Length: 297
Ligand code: GDP
Ligand code: K
Ligand code: MG
Image (cartoon, rainbow, N blue to C red; front, side):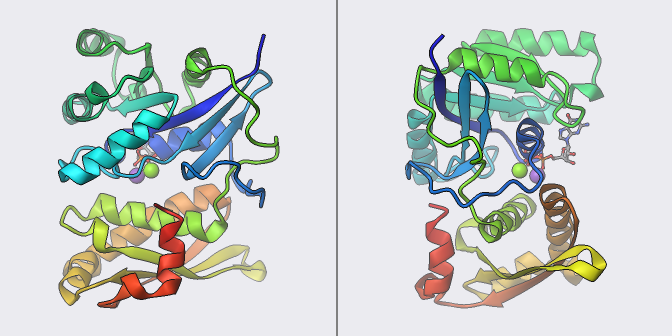
């Protein structure tokens, strides 16, 4: 059989479990190498190496929070990215809000493209089989998914099926990356991206596109067996700083907590995360911020 390879995008509303799935599939704790990417089309989130295939997970700019109706430009950007991948994984939750998000994403994005798409119904550990069947039927009717797979990313259930179905949808292709290559992002970039994601998930206002995150310090404290990370959230206006910090600092606290939990999972050790918000009217002109931002686009 010939080797298969391709680019995969996982889309879905915040907190459905996309990162949990990716971490489980890649079984990646600290597996960063400095290999140069052979493509600049996408930002690579991770590469899964199989004997018969290579599955390359990429980011989808434009869908940060697919449940929020963004402006036409963001939707268009997301659609253009999806046009270029080989397989789309849509992840939903089997709860009322999750099903509604699923319909929205199908109508807004999937119906605009013509790509093999797989529906993942995550968190099935929280429902019963009789509850699951009507959901599968419902989504079978509204979109020609290649497969609909109930999974639990957290309990690592159904993951073999996910891999099997993805490989089934992949075209024949080369081994794009050497086998020790897991991701092309540096530790600081990954960290900044995770913090940015938590800001996006936590703030519903017009915040995401005026925010940049830079990681100023990233070092181990060996005697404490922990990682010290200092990051700055750059905003343009004082009012935006207020939104991010929230009443009595509650919002920044939740952002920090969510980011820390995911960072500990990814780096495999305790993390001390120091977060600062800096008002910087012209951060778009600050080359340091730009340097990190450009890598995201
Ligand atoms: P993302 O925003 O889509 O990347 O979602 P995350 O991967 O950050 O997960 C959001 C939350 O859902 C976390 O608290 C996860 O532990 C939880 N979660 C993810 N997958 C499952 C699952 O299969 N079952 C349950 N019960 N919780 C899950
Ligand atoms: K999340
Ligand atoms: Mg995530």
